Amino acid sequence: MTAQNQPLQADTTGKIALVTGGSRGLGRSIALQLAHAGTDVILTYRERKDEGAAVVAEIEALGRRATLLQLDVADTSRRHGFHDELRTLLQSTWQRESFDFLINNAGNMRMAPFAETTEDHFDSLMNIHLRGVFFLTQALLPRIANGGRIVNISSGLTRFTRPGYSAYAIMKGAVETLTKYLAKELGPRGITANVVAAGPTETELTVNSLGRPEIRNLFVSQTALGRVGVPDDIGGVVTFLCSEQGRWVTAQRIEASGGIFL
Image (cartoon, rainbow, N blue to C red; front, top):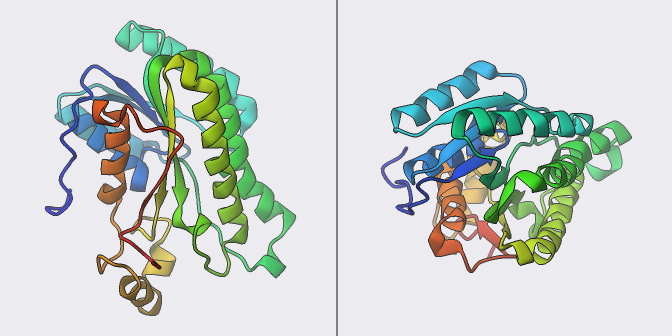
């Protein structure tokens, strides 16, 4: 972790988090910062098991337990089977029936101008970023402990616009609306639901855009804090929402963007 982005000191000892897409990028940072705060972590990966295993090793080096499950969030037909695998894992590893924090992070970023967006492109984004989040969360409700937390990862692109991201942004906008409904309907169980909307952040998904000096310089010049984000900027916000200090925050969209396009 970078010196300017140290883990948030928020104690979540004894809790268990499930982080989708936890093998790289934002998911990796979220998983590690939660582990620094005392949380055990279950990571999902889609294809690169080796990357997930490396994050598990990092978490175990911090003295926390971590495990790995394969999941393609876009394949909603797998959600019930995944639920059963998760239940078995919780029982065998933690002797528990439930986990505490669901972090819906898994995703990709495909861009195309509105006029050139195909149905396949649209459906791919919808299956990952909206349908997947909706039905995976639904399937896992019996496993989320009362008093637990749901954090959905969104994007600054639901507030400001960049050509080429219309399909991606509307899926994230729908997840932001879904989050309010989750907060309302799950409130009686003491479960909070919030959105963390990331601004331009250096990950594997953004290398093609932020790697271009003209785009990077535009974002830097339009950001109050004068730089683009790094994954630890997002992981700390998620950790806060999962901590005891974040217990009274629900149905909120928290943008972690350094103050871009104010």
